[in-house]
Structures are given as C-alpha cells and as structure tokens.
Length: 102
Image (cartoon, rainbow, N blue to C red):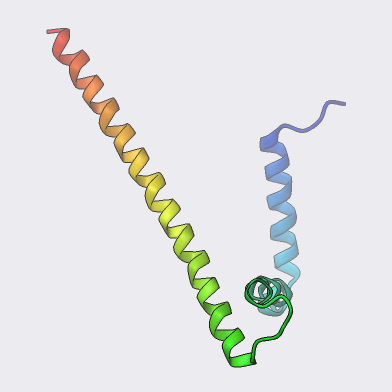
C-alpha cells in the first residue's frame, strides 16, 4: 500500500490533535512544561553557569526574550517588504504587457 499524501497526513494529524484537545480538561496545565522550557532557554542563554544574581539573571533573560521576538518581527517585516516589492514588479510587468498589446 502506498504512503499517504501530504494532505492526508495533515488531515490525520489535525484529527489526532483535535481529539487530544477534546479530552484535555486543563489546556494550560497540559502546555505548562513547554512554556517553562521555552522561558528557561533564555535563562540558560544569558547565564549558563548560573553565576549571576537572580534579579540580574531575570533581567537579562527577559531582554533576551524581547530580542528573540524583535528578531522575529524584523524578519517578518523584511519578508513582507520583499513580497510587496515582488508584487509591484509583477504589476509593472503586467502593465507593460497590457500597454504593449494595444
């Protein structure tokens, strides 16, 4: 039997996810470990040896987290600018083609 197509795999994965969350009584508790691990990565990044005082370590970790989100935003804005530029170039080419056919 041949393997499933990407669309079939996606549909089965979505079904499994919906069924899992339908059985979950406390979604927040179910995802708490993942949220904790995400935040911990910033603490580990700024002070892997754990030598800083807790307050300073926390400040730096939160700054690292802010930088993480700022980097995502900058990348999103750059991608949007590139898409907009490509759209303008295509529109200009279309206008040139339409003008040349007359």
